[in-house]
Image (tube, rainbow, N blue to C red; front, side):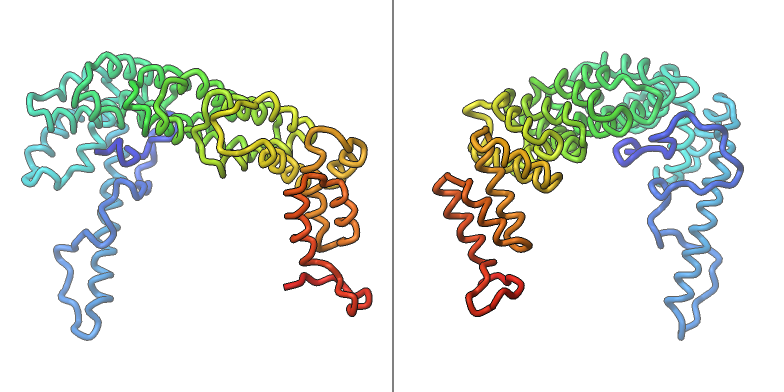
Length: 390
């Protein structure tokens, strides 16, 4: 199905100007490399069979690309009546059902753009497989040109094979067109449909609208989705938020995840909490308190504070050190001192030892002692550069 595999190459851009007569179609619609045969190619020399066959295939594929490029220009300039006639001619000439499949899909896509619901009605057939094939291509073109109208039609379909088979081209056409109301299409998806396409819509929304609007979208529509659907969408959102330096969405996502059930792994949670430390510094320790719930996470409170401190120390060691010196009994002070000691273990063992004195938690102190022991200066070294003990 064209839509399921990325669709007609107009996808992911706005309605184009008519293309020039000679353009290169993308690889997604071209025949596999080496599959084309040159019918009149000469017999290869026995000493160089591979080179001759490769050259013939390359020539054939080049001719195929040029033919499709010409068709693009013709289709863009043709009327709907002319395209219907061309489509019927190609169908009658297609003995195997797949000889000119790409050409017919190009024409059907354009007819979907031009005629929308009329093209959908004209391609309906009592043979379910044929109806789905032609519907899919026409619907994708219609959704690209008029996303809201196509979505309204698709959303009215009852549960069943036809609705499911048209979901991929509906989403592809909608996202590649001018439709920016991602909440509209998410609102039309039923629970089983969220699994794959919910994540795809979230990823596209991140690219088009950015983090904060997409976070709003997720919170509004994924609350009742199953764990797998939330997990797939959360992976995209969590990765984008972790790469952000804006503390507002980081704090909001951190608190939302804790209070509504994390749909990402413990590793992804740690990545987020480290990002919180990098963006929020000491304030991020307070965010952990806001997000505190006894369930919904595999990380204990100390592990989370260590993640905040690590993110902060990596982002701004000097600020973290100043805060730790000035706030020896604040929430997160022990974990920050621990990470400062580790950060200085190799470059400044003496300073690391000073930080270690603030680590009063017995378990952390024991772990830190093992780490610092690897970088102690042996007595016989006589002040040489510290090297880790084996």
